[in-house]
Length: 234
Image (cartoon, rainbow, N blue to C red; front, side, top):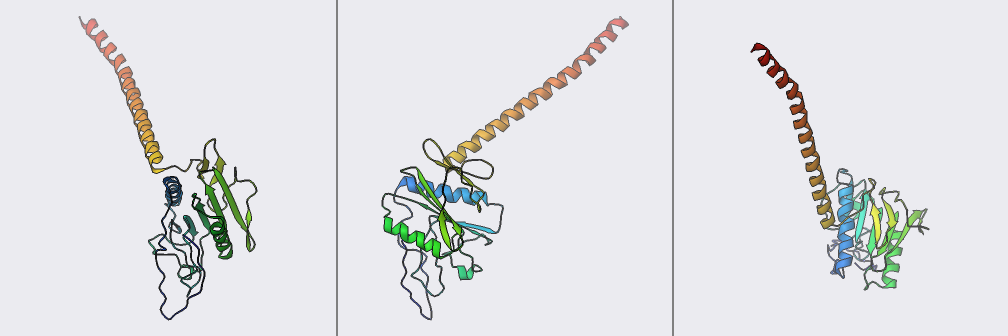
């Protein structure tokens, strides 16, 4: 996931699909990366023109297979979904990733992250978010003209592109989708789905009970009238 920049041009240029670097350095960083990528994919699931990827090599310059980086998560609008070995803007209508996330680990160095910032600023990223889960810190930058300007206050910041909001919780940063629901891990999403299924089953059971009581109530006068007629006949 490091940034490299010497230029290499040849008649037949290969663009490697791996940089040989691990996707994450520890389980906490991996959890955040997978959570962000998975929730972004779910957020834009119904939009065929939004592409979301994680740890995918991005080559910004045609003919240069050394200038590259692999953001932890990135979002491209007006690009179709589908599998890719790497992201090459010259094959994508000239569209660079508009939103990028990086999740820090203890192994990240200041120089490395500075180079990444310069890379994203140079090659057209509109929103860049840097999260440190160990320190519960979040930084953001938004493009203004040719550069990325820091977001003055991330607590409550609404992403122009994603429509998602960032909030500081007591123990960790929260990312809220446009529906107000917090981004969640796969385990949390599974538990949420189970709770919703149980709640729906409970509502259905109560509705069935109410319907049964209603039927019994409507049937009771009929039975009473029938009994009265039988007594009169005697």
